Amino acid sequence: MPDNRSNLPVRTTTQAPVPVAATTPVAPSAVVLPHGLRQLTDMPREELDNLASDFGLDPTEYKTRQHLVAALHDRRQMIVGLDREAMLDVVRWGRRPIAQAASNEQIAQEIARITSMRFSGLSQRGLVVLSRMRGIPAQESDPIPHLVRQLKKQEGLFAKLARKRRAFVGSMVANMLGDADSGSATADYQYLPPAQGAGTSTKPGPSPASGSPSLKQDIEESGLFGGISNRIKKTADNYLNQKLDEVEARIDRKLDEIDRRLAEWRDKEVANRIRILKITLWASVIVAAVSLVYSYIKLHWVGP
Image (cartoon, rainbow, N blue to C red; front, side, top):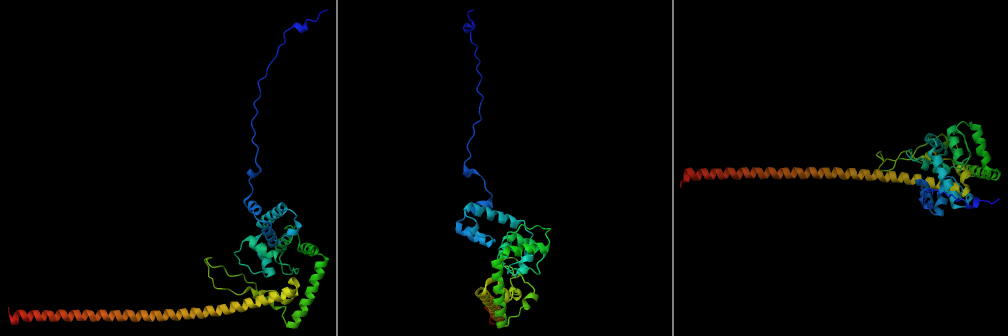
């Protein structure tokens, strides 16, 4: 039987093409970065290493630049969220010289310079801040013994032995020099005076070195030569500050004396000018009177 299907007309249907939305590729430079992160990416590696050291990070632990930038950004974000009063507790405990109106990052940089492992006198919130600055994930509810144990555990065995050795050497040097260990513990901490232009008095307050750590603690934290050099530097700073205060007081006295003499000279000059004006006025009156008498005599006695 013949197949007639091949003779049938084939019906074709054409579908309208579906419009496809054009997509434009996004360039990698079009990604918007946070302002602080963008500033970090523009810095050279040397400055990034110095900034990481200032914030308590070890730049040698980050092999690539991207990892270091990310760690710095995370550290700065963490510092922003820290309690300011707790940070000031750490600064007072560590006897670090800083102004009370300093920013959180400035306070954090001073906290990062504290290497002491004597945690007596530090509050619980201060221990939380110190733990976070030293890379320990501490919580606000952690008790003080747990925080102290974590901080001492982070130090390591060899670092602890080196600190004990420095403490022994520091005690020997302090005994040889007769350094009092109890004087600095009872002294009150003093903030640095505000900078000029802050709208407050620029007179220097009590020196923060009056509550500085003892020589033994300096040697324990910085070593023999570092502790002695720090103590010499602090003593020299105190001496220079004292001499500068004396020079400033002497200059103030000289300026007061100059102002007094200038006031006396000004008073004398004013008195002389008033005397000259009086003489001129009396001379004018006398000349006018003589001229009037002369005119009267000439008119009535001498005649035309």
